[in-house]
Amino acid sequence: MLDIRLIPKQNIKSIIPLVHLLNGVDESILLQRLEVMMQNNYQCLGVYDTSASPGESNEKLIGICGLWTLMKFYNGKHLEPDNVVIHPDYRGKGIGELMMEWVDNYAKENNYEAIELNAYIENVKGVEFWKKAGYNIRGHHFQKLIKQ
Image (cartoon, rainbow, N blue to C red):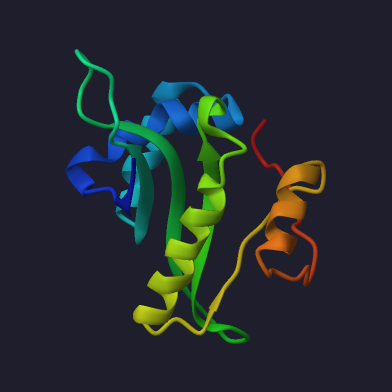
């Protein structure tokens, strides 16, 4: 059984293992960055498996989706999902679709004008996922690294 909900601020550090799976950045660095992100309008959606085996805790965090509220001239108030990841043991089971359905409903209920996100070109599965979810490619994501 799955439960999809915003992760309370006091439990936000629970996302670090899944974020590490996604990008491989050292967990201590991720924790430092998360502290700053929490000061800048960051929230995170969690997907929990509540059907734990006997002897296990009653729920396991199996998916996350960071959420930013942004205001831009061209888009107005919009929601930006980022760092969307499902634990490898749970992929291919429709959990990503359920999570994005939750995000769509949240955006509608909270008067957002749009949802906008970035997806890496090399993430072919991800790009296809977003297209299938109704997102259109509108531009390019540019990056210039200053500190390497």
